[in-house]
Length: 166
Image 1 (cartoon, rainbow, N blue to C red):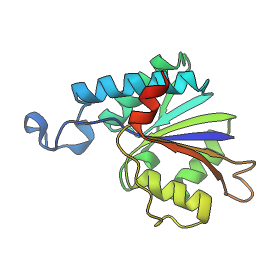
Image 2: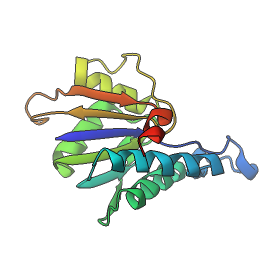
Image 3: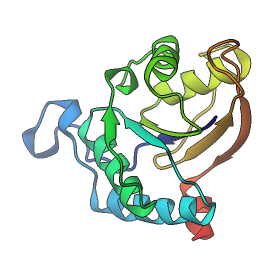
Image 4: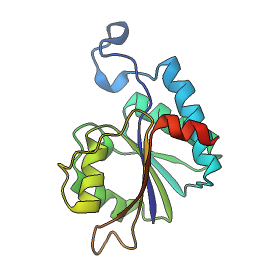
């Protein structure tokens, strides 16, 4: 399995238009533009997801939707609470094993949720210090998450580098 872990693109600041609900912050114009370039970069890498799963937060959902458009993904997008802020790596792994065992999976989430998942999969330590910028993507590969729950870090690209690939 290939897993592409994506940190959502740039979102409006907290308190956007008086909105106190963190889950309702939308992408900014910069966020929309950035994720479009990132999707083009991923397409240039010939990434063809079998499944895209996102945090239900608005800016993560919008990121997933724009990735789907840019990658010509026409299947159902899934939204899962385990990918919301505060999501635990162990819970995410259980969800992957139960519902999303495919050859190519894209997960759209938040920090530090993504870093915790990466750390859990590559060194069995969710506290490892890996920071992914907004729109950054980490590629992991795994033979079988059901047995060992281990993955290999294939690459980690910043939004700027991904944008240059398109």
